[in-house]
Each structure stands twice: as C-alpha cells, then as structure tokens.
Image (tube, rainbow, N blue to C red; front, side, top):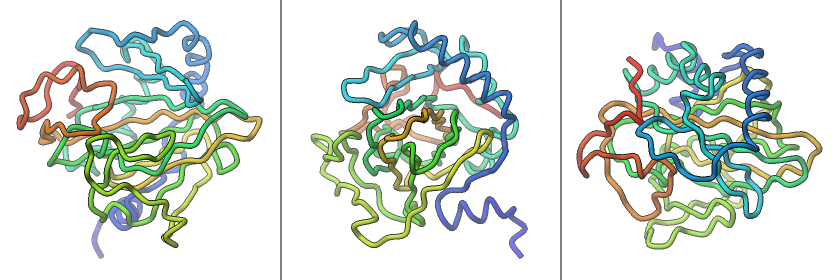
Length: 264
C-alpha cells in the first residue's frame, strides 16, 4: 500500500480530483452575494498595486475583464485561505505554495460561450516547480450549463501551445502543437457534476475546456492557481495572464513579490 489518501492517488493517476463538500456552502453563498453586488461596480482597469488580484471575466462575446484587490473581497479571500483548500494545494505542490491567480469565470444563462481545450501552463510564464489549479464552483454545475470537462491522464502529455480561448486557434508566435479535442481523438474525458462546496484540483498540464451555457441557470466558478516556491519566471509567446505586469522577478529567477503571497 502507498499510504497516500485516495484523492491523492486519483490526482496522480488522472491529473485531477474532485474533493466533494470541501468548503461550507454558507461561504459559497456569501461569495455569490458579494459577486452579485460588486461586479457591476468593479473596475475594468488593472490595479497598479503590488497585491493579489481578483479577476472577474464574464465569458461572452466582447466580455471585458473586471478587477478588484483580493484583500477587498472578503468571501473570496476566505476561500483562498481555507485550510482545506490550502492543505490540499500544499500536498499536491509538495510544500509551501504561492497564490498566483484568482479568476472568476462567469457564463451567464443562455449567453455563456465555450472555453476551448487548453493546458493552463501554456498561458503562464513559468517553468520548473509545480503548478496546481483549484476550481471552486459558485453555482451547481453540469454539462447543461457549461460544465468543466477534463481529459483523463492528459497531465502526462507534453506542453501544447496557448490558444485563443474563444476560438481554439493557436496563439501568435507560439510554435508548439495546438491542443486537440479529446472527443475527436477518441480519448477519455470526464465532465463531472458539481454541487456547492465541491472543489476540483488539477495539474497545470491537464487538458480541459468547457461548453456553452445554454441553460437558464448561472455558471460561475472561482479558479485559483497555486505554485510551489521553486517556480521559475520564464516568459514565452502566448503568455496572457492578468498578473504578468505584476511580476518583478528577473528571467530565470524564482517568482517573488507582494502580488503572490506565500502560504506556509
């Protein structure tokens, strides 16, 4: 026997794991209420502060990103700092972690567009270390309202190119092979149903995407990125994350700075 918990074995095997009921539902309800009130007033201008951001992206045609400082977003800061989330992230990253990014993907009822298949690492200027995503549904989620699909075992594949998340077209200047739709290749993928309080963790190389929201129900999800402390700043074509302007590290040096807090 390995001595590892079942969820860790599933992550190592499949490249992702769903941890059911990891967060209290009242915390998720508080996050829903905060977002409903704050989103219309949130700025479309990137803050200049060297502090972690909360990015809000309504995924519709022409949808602009909105921004707030994470410290001003109490329910979302509480999710980030939740011991259950942090202990899982630290176990998967092999020790202390940095928060790299916090993004809300919002697919409104009847309007939300698909997200093309991609690997998260393709968009980030990093190499070495370990990068893990933690996705926290803010609404019940299934295939009907644009649920998340993940290709089983794809974390063992090479890094593919960054893509336009609307079209799936390879990013300009990125000469790596573009990711392929696993359904067209006959590869195994899953589209789990999520209840409030569930959290899915996946490797930065796990291929994933999502369909349109053609239902009458909202589909909002908080996407967190945690990195091990040995993650190196290594920019390349296709990098497009909102936090890139906050990186102060020299190329080839470990990531550092107040925008990327450490959790021991």
